[in-house]
Image (tube, rainbow, N blue to C red; front, top):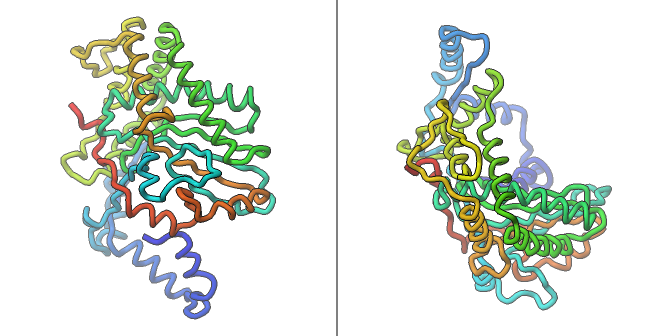
Length: 371
C-alpha cells in the first residue's frame, strides 16, 4: 500500500517530470480497476420488487463481473489494529524521555496545519482499551457507558470551565481491525498542543474521582440513557434497511467465512449488559434477550466501570497505552521543528514505519461471535 506522499511524488515533482502520466495510462488504470479483479455487492431498497432487483444484478454482472476475474478473499484488504506500546515499552523502543518532556503519553504524533491561515491547534488523546474480542459484549457496553458519561464531563471541564476551545469531546473509539479505546479531542486557538495534553490528563484524573463519587442512582440513570440509545427503534423503511445492511457490512472486514454471519441482535445484547435491577423492565417480545443473563446492580456496574478506567485510562496504570496526536497552527511550527527526533515523537511517515516494526497487533475477531 502506498502512502499519500508516494502518490503525490508520482503525479508531481521530479518523478512526474521524468515520466509524465498520460491520459491513456489514466484510462488503462481506470479500466483495470473496474474490470480487473472484481467483487461487487449491491443493496436494492425502496419501490422495487424482487424481479427488478434481479435485473439490477444482471446489469452489474453483464457489464462488470463477466469482463473481470473474481477477487479472491486472499486479495481483499485485511485490517489489523496495532498495539500502542505502554510507557515502559516505549522507553525500550525510543530510549528515555527528553529531559524537558512532561508528557505521559507512550507515543506522540505531531503535524503542522497545511494552511498558513490556520490559527487553531488541536489534540486527539487516544487511549487504547484492548480489542473488542477480548472485551466482549460486557466490556464494549461498559466502554460505551464510560464514553457517554465522559462526554458531558469533558465538555463541562475543558470547554465551559477552562475555555480551552470551541471543540471539546470525549467518546469511545473503534479502530479498524478490532481495537477499542477512548478519545479526548480538543481544538484551541489560544493553547498549544502540549498544554492541551496536560489539561486532558488533568481531566482524566478528575473524571476518575467523579466515577468513584458518583451516586448509584445516577449510574442507573446514565445506564438507562445508553440503553435507550441502543434500543432506539427505526422509524421508517430507510432506517430499517440501513440498520440491517450496516450489520451485514460489519462482517466485510472479517477474514474467516465461519465468522461472516451478521449478529442482527448485537445492539440488544449490548443493551442487556446495562439493564439494571434498579431500572424499569425492558423485556420486550420483539427483542431477543437472554432470559438466563442475570441483571447487575448499579453498584456492580459502577465497580466494573472503575476497574476498566483504572486499568486502561489512569496515568499510573502500567497497562495504559496512549498516543497523543498533536496538530500545530503555523504559529507553532517552530515547536514542531524543535521536537523532531526527540524520543517517542513521530514527525514523519518514516518515523511511523520505524515504530511499526516493534508493534504486535490485536486479535481481529469480532466480539459478537461470542456465545
